[in-house]
Length: 106
Image (cartoon, rainbow, N blue to C red):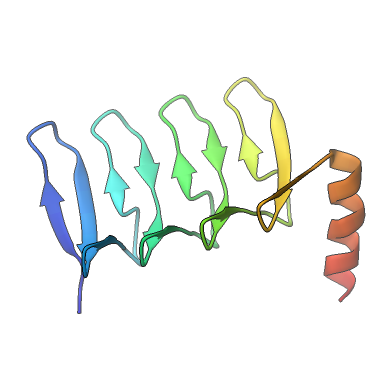
């Protein structure tokens, strides 16, 4: 089955499968104002880039609906600030870096 795309009067688009936001080959939500959201089976999820891209340039990496990124910050704000998350847990840069090195070894 393929997700069904619905386009709203304001220009926003959503792809749904069985009532849940879902799209494999692109964002499941494209807002006319430039915001994009990637979902799989109703969960924010993307493994090859950020799952949320805001119009101001901020980016958020999610896996299975949890902020998560091993190879960099899971949140990059447009102002340049960052935050580091693994499996939905917020870490300082130093904690994240230690954990990241352990995970890459395993």
